[in-house]
Amino acid sequence: MYGRAASALERYIERYPDETESWYLLGEANRQQGGAEHEKKAEESYLKALSIDADHANSHKMLGIMRLKAGDKAAARE
Image 1: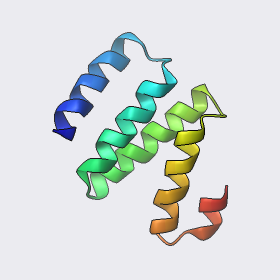
Image 2 (image 1 turned 90 degrees about the vertical axis):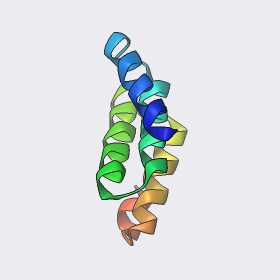
Image 3 (image 1 turned 90 degrees about the horizontal axis):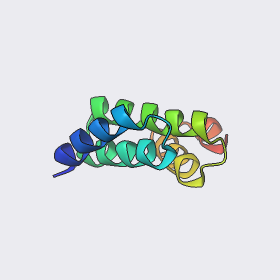
Image 4 (image 1 turned 180 degrees about the vertical axis):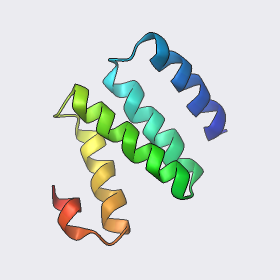
């Protein structure tokens, strides 16, 4: 299910690359799939969302949660 969502979001992003929320949702779709590869893709998507809108709260929140779960408390506070 999340794999199909990620594929659809990737196609959407090809047409509208500056849509912050789409990058965030792509991060969510990847994160939900689990595993190191998908978590890396999720982090990249959240960072891309933040490069478009540095104040995107959900991307900040999810990056913090992911980093906290990885044991990186200092990075989680950023």
